[in-house]
Image (tube, rainbow, N blue to C red):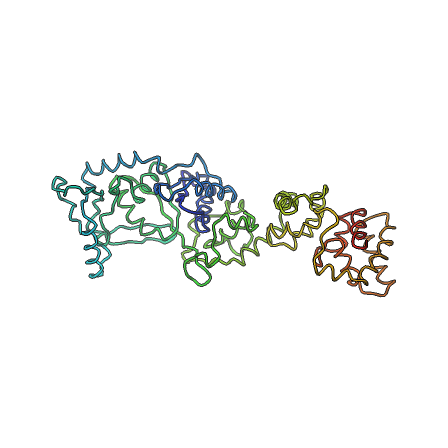
Length: 468
């Protein structure tokens, strides 16, 4: 066990919790739990115009749905503004930061010149050593960091290895905007330091930010966390993941009837693996996961594989738990048509139902015939199966079934097979109209299983309903 590990997930509440963010949270959670450390949550809500309470709630609900519970109370970044102000003033007093009074027009000229010369650094540092007393009137300044002018900054990354950039390629970054608000660069460094974050685990699109943030750590004289920048999720076409690839907010996947176990398992294996293991529970992942084992190559989001994995977890799930999940869906869909023995029947027949479902919604739909009151609604295909011939067989079979005292799958099988032989017909000739009468459809679990779950009274009553 590694001691002193503290990771964090720090989303911005400006929209839904997307699939990439969920994987970032998962990897931070797993590494903290694997090492016996802490997993913290920080809401980066400094963008007051775009941050919403609804987005914060969605983030919290998404993490709870996945079972990624954080330690300690979540921290709001905006509540720490005075701390950010105090520290940037300290940098100014130590001549490590300065006021910049450049106008938008001046900045645009610098940017155009840098672009024409093919340079990545566009700010020319003209206010770096000027006296603020010479500032133009009516211009609200920003505060910039005095970045080193020579040498290089190196990130020793647990995933990417050592990556360096020349300091002369980086501008004197803005720490505070003209409106008095801290930039992301400053706030994230101060907050990670104050929260004692030991490991910053995030997407490799943040790698360029890390070079700049290391300069801020150095200006404050602070030790910096260990960084681990994991590859991003891509679509199957190799491009950055977007909605056109099926990438939705986490809440949308939940509405689609996916199980959190399947989502965690799928996200876990995007850039990380444990041998040839495909099915990995959260408990196993905590035991096995190490951030150093994450690969550098982007992984491709394959929605069909996620659905396949979800089917597996449905089949393996506890029957009673699945009844709990589909119960509100059935109550809403069937309104007042629920039979008083609906959920007892569903639990008894769950083994056959979950074999044929890919998600919770499908499972609920497939279970409706067990849940609804008589008379059940018949589909068009069921009505075709209940033609004159089908009803004739049901009329005869009703007498055979009514004489059975020990109502079980075995005795039912014997009775129906015996009837088919007596009439010299294939089993399917009678099974299909029987299925239609009992379920209202022509596709369902095995007919003997359905008869056993419904019981003698309900089964015969449903047959009688279509005959009368």
